[in-house]
Length: 385
Image 1 (cartoon, rainbow, N blue to C red):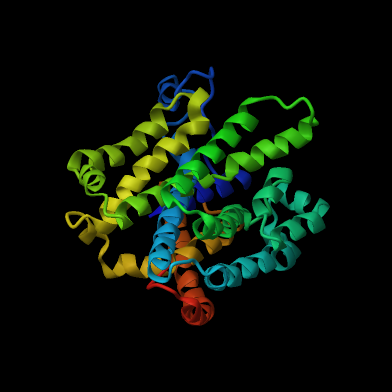
Image 2: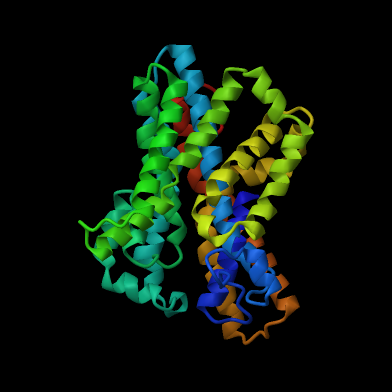
């Protein structure tokens, strides 16, 4: 579901880049105090624009919270079972899960797709050509989020910036679990540290640095949402340590439905001047949703369906392949001169989603599954992530 939000945003973003039809890709205008819904009411933006602009980022924030939750729960279980955390085993599990598809996408984005005019994206393709080697090196060394802070996104693989954030989190987090004596304090201090760093760098002008360097630092920090993962980790701690009173509050209907309702409210009603902190509030809502849908008997059955299990297995592929497929479908519509109307837009969504699922399944069956079998060699506690 989170991946689908990212797909929605990127379909509309590619339509915008290729100038196909009416563009919903526009952030609201107006004063810094104006909310998205005020812009809609004042006819400064189509009603769907705030959703389209924020759906993808919301999906990614959900990924970060979920990642922090899952990884931290497994680390807690491993430390309780073995008395420590095996860094080698942890890193090998993550490498076998993440690297094969990541480096395949890197190969496509840097060495194959740029050779075809069909995959040309205005401005981004020129940027890649002009900054090919530094971009490539940053991607190879797993800091695509830094590459994207310095240069324009690499066409068709720009979503990989979040994989960089995940990988940097994976390097840091097991070290904290291994070395920290009080895990709860470690999680809280980590959360406060990253929030403080962001507040310091994003709200203060650093006169000792050049404007371009300062802008890169701010872009890099804005995208590196480790604090969202730390909040997910706190949810894992509450669940693993069976903090009954807190769980009872989280499992209440009021908390669950308030968390669900808060997402559209935050999208449309958050004033512009606090947009940068919106992800923190959403992260709290997401951890409530995650705990309810995964462990609350009243709601957990909702996702215990074969279709969700299937989509969950291939969700990494959905995230990594969809950008290329968006371009293929929308460029094909342009070449075939298919008119822009409601039916053509529905067809674009059907084709993009169905093709993405199909290719992601093939990738899972014939590429990823082989590496996942190797991953069990380094398994310390039962895991499907």
